Length: 284
Image: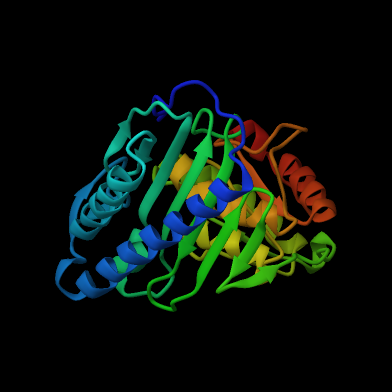
């Protein structure tokens, strides 16, 4: 899961953060144009990964290859970690973390809730050890584009985001996602069954990148998921954090692949505690 990114890097200066954010956005938009234009002819499932529900299309592969070519031309010293193409090494201490289509099942079925996620992180490209530096989440169907730079804030279509304080858990609209194996889905269903009577409602949108951006944009009050890969979360993580969202794990742990809870700080603590009561920590 990790790319060889060289020694941990100090946070880049503001000027470089801006340049990295610009490249992330340009790459995400270029890949988005490709996958949207190719959906009618190339959205068929070409392979599966961890289970029959974990699908890949030709456009997943083509979009990631496009982004990799852009990065190789403009940032050849950086490492790359992509969902489809694995990892390539670099010497700069920075790693680009790519999900060419986050929400591939939605893409296959023509549901307009999928995104291209492009981020660059310093240090090891895995939470909680990474330091996200810049990122972009772009929905090719709606054209909405979230961008963020470390210390520079988060934006939706150029408008600054500042997440207001959330409601109490009982009034919260909570997003989540599910894994691909039957055993994990059964565990996650039990957690949802515990949580559903204790919140306003639950949404399963099908793209963690969009879920995190929706929390940043106050379209969801909170989001949690177990088993996210770095490419699922990297860009959305930075957008959420720069908008003032807390990202935590369970029992005082940091957010990681074991569990990521994203919400305004008080709500994040309340939701994390409820997930522990639901048995999510034991399942993880």
